[in-house]
Length: 377
Image 1 (cartoon, rainbow, N blue to C red):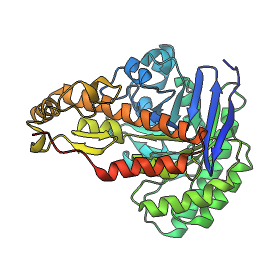
Image 2 (cartoon, one colour):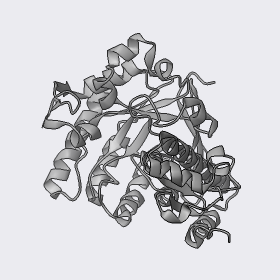
Image 3 (cartoon, rainbow, N blue to C red):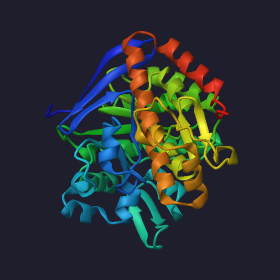
C-alpha cells in the first residue's frame, strides 16, 4: 500500500468518473459512499458487517467526538481506528455543520466559533487550527477544513460573507495541517445557491492546491434541481486530478445524478437513519415496513440480494419488529440499506468502466418506477 495519498481516474463515461484513492490504510474505490459513523460507530452495525458490505471508508465527526469522549482521550487510546476497530481509512467532518445546526448560543468571529454544547451546556471554542488539531488527535486519514455552513434560503450578502470567511479559514487549516504524507486535507466549496459565489469559492480553493475538494452547504433544504445546477457549475471549476466530495448527500437518486456531474465521494445518514425508522431501500425502491400490508407477507425484501437481512427475513417479521419497537428491526433494516447503497456504488463503478453509465442509470430508474411487486396470493 502506498505511503502517500494519491488519486487516479481510471475510466470516464461522460462526466462520470471511476477512480481510486490510495493511502496507507487502504484503497478507496470511487464513486464511493461513506457510511456515517458520527460518534465512532455506524449506528446499529458492527464494523465487521460494514466492511463486509464493500465499504472502503467511513466518516467520523469532529464536533461529536470532541464532546464525547474527547479527542485527547481517543488519542490516548490509540486513535479512532483502534478505538472503533476500523483499521481502514476514515474521513472526519470538521464539525462546522454541527456547530451551526446543533450547538446553542453560537458566536461566529474571524478567529473561530464559540458555542455551547448541546450535550452538557459547556462553552467551547473551535478555531480552524483547533479543528485540525482535533482531527489529528483522532488520526483521521482525510480531514476537512472548518467552514461556515448556513441554511438556505439566505440573503446573498450573508452567503457571501460566510463563503469568504470559509476561504480564510481554509488557508488557516492548510497551514495547520502542514505536510502529512499519506493523509489529506480537503477544502469545502461554499456559496449557497449562488453560482457566481460558488465559482469564486471553487477557484480560490483550487489555487490552494489541496489534495481534494468538497462541495458543502447543499442538501440543506434546497430543491434537487438547485443542487444539480450548483454541481454543474462547480465541478468543472475544480481540478480534474483531485477527488470531489459532495457532503451530506444523499438519496440513491441524488447519487446517480451527482455522479453524472462528476462527483466521486458521498456520505449521508439517510440509510442508517431510515433503517432505524422502518424504511428499507431496495432495487425496487423504498419499502415502508410500518405499513400494515406487510403484516402477512412472507417474502423477503429482496430474494436476489447477497445481504442476509434483505434475503433471509420475511417482510412480515420485519414489520413485526418495527411495530414492536424491537432493536433488531432497526439493525436488520440498517444492514439492508447499507448493503443496497454499497451495491449501488459497485453497480455505478462497473457501468462507468463498461462505458454504459447512462444506460445503467435508466435501467435502475425504470426498476424503481415499476416499484415493489404485490404480495403473492
